[in-house]
Amino acid sequence: MTPPEMRANAGVLAKPSKASRRKGKSRAIVMEVPDILKPQKKARKKKSLLFMGMRRVWRLFLMGTGSLLIVAGALIAPLPGPFGLPISLLGLVVVMRNSYWAKRQFIRLKKKHPNWLMPIRKLLRPKPKVASVFWQQALRTERLVFRRENRVLRVFRHRFLRPRK
Image 1 (cartoon, rainbow, N blue to C red):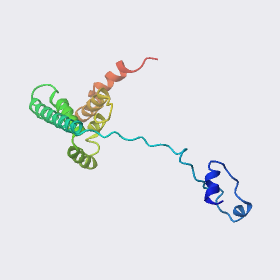
Image 2: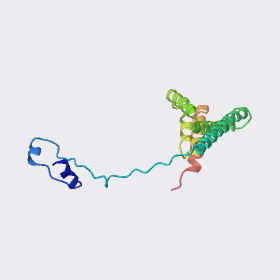
Image 3: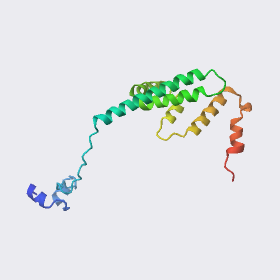
Image 4: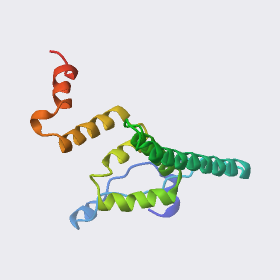
């Protein structure tokens, strides 16, 4: 077929010739699709400089807030109660969601120590399940600290949190 014929017959499927079948060539026929049938690309809206500037200011504000939470968690950590670590982790999550440099450092550290950073990785997901992450960490900590016969959380889970049949 010549190119004008291809344009006229675009969209019409034709059978390959017997000669092409005998030679072992591909049976597919390449045909040109008319411009009318091609999907049209939507024009992307350009964002204004004011919008881009406000976004950058907002990210800097969030990074500062996250840094303050990390420092506050470090100051609260020596006090009785487990409030320092969750506050520091929350600050770390806020900083890493808004800073490319912090993300790169986290990825390097993740490659070196993947098991240590598993809870932080789970908290960085778009819709994190915070309660399950803290429960898993409590079970891990209990396993590190207590012997098998002295563990309480596992027994609590099996006794009270299991679905009833």
